Length: 186
Image (cartoon, rainbow, N blue to C red; front, side, top):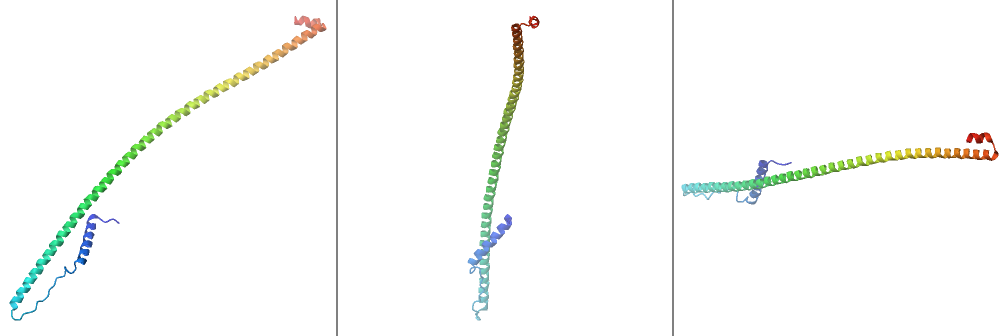
């Protein structure tokens, strides 16, 4: 699960301080050693204790200031890293948007070209269908003419047979001498 930036920074600082504390643990221990008590000069011993306490307080303040400075430095570094990461994220987002725009442009171009190709194919199909319809009409007309020609040829053949038959009949009658059919034929 992602952590928010303040929580991440807080945990990072804790981890860093814990790591440094473990390394420098001997330096972080304050010693309240009692100097040997001198019964001769209790005021000097008390004054010495006051100086020691003042020195310890000064050391503690210096230590706190150093830790504070270190924390500020780490915070500034973390903020800089966050800014860099944010810039990287923005750059990646910008790249993603540019790539999406290119993909959309390419997709639109392909779709347009596809649409044009489909229209061309549809026109070719329409032309082919029109040619097929014309060819079918021509074929039908040719078949009709063929049937008509066959019918005429049959009629002509039948007429030719009748003529041949009539000629035979007349020739036979003339040879046989039948005047009635010969007069009818003439």
